[in-house]
Length: 479
Image (tube, rainbow, N blue to C red; front, top):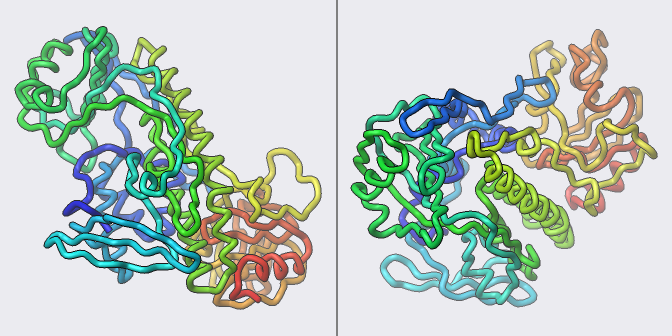
């Protein structure tokens, strides 16, 4: 359900981290995402009209067998939302636009939402659960009277927007870190026509006014003054004034209502974490709701959403606040280097109630239950290439077996079981052959690894009975 007639039209969350790209591959949209966007350009630093040379603030890693995506991908948020919407409709889903929630109540059995259509007609919708993804000023969260704890960060007021500009090279990210009045950043976002605009207002008492200050002539005058370039602003697609606040909901679940994305946590946009973390919120909660609503799993499974995602959000607020401070101290470029910790590939759920590590002590640096399940190239029994991510794709669990451990008997509709043979092994005695040894190096030479539908290792063990017990406790179809 969306109150407006379409998704937000602005660029905003334009950086898709490697972990988000993996999720989009699982959802069947990565091809469209990659076709529509591109990599981040080098940053051109300026002192007025004098170029100071380029710098690359992005950590760019070559793809590896276990991590197939090594750098952030650029695509405007509105286009990402369009692609996801198209995929939803392919799968039979539907978004009701021009529909606004006006009231909410819940009881022991369901949630009742009152919604208003574009023609003014109201309807009551009753459902077992509700997911509130309605932004930092969440109507649902406020309506429930739920706490949202945080503070405005020590950063200057900012003007964000999308502007159509003539007179600037579109192949670089242009930054004036020491511009009079504060930093100016202009970057042509791949997959879109406008330049993404960011202007700091550092003078005492200076504040952007998104009314008169966001008119094309006013933005043009501002940019010419700040940059020393003869720029022409043809259009302002959207603009917004921002004072950065870091805040997090006291709880992510209130009985039958779940908070996700900005409704659960808001923070500095630095580091490209917001949209990506919101995608992971939805990915984490989605398979659990499916297990409860479609497969008869116990509703207590849904408690793990807050247990897993709230610590991630707390770490997110700390990380983005740190990056914001590093940006402000970087007077040479105005932005600090975005390292691999922003790629979200090392995020884990080792302390989750859903995680079971049953192998005793695991050596430091090896895969542990709760970690992201790595990819690896393999081959099927016919010798055709098949990646582990191909095996994981879909809403099922996957049991990977390495070595000679006996396999438990598990229902095929809930769990896909794959015995992984070493390089050179007889393909008829295994489900997949680890043709180059990458799977064994990523996982282990011996053991069973149960991978959740969202691509995290739920269980690591040597005992097949552990897999049967785990699934009977957490997934009703496996009983």
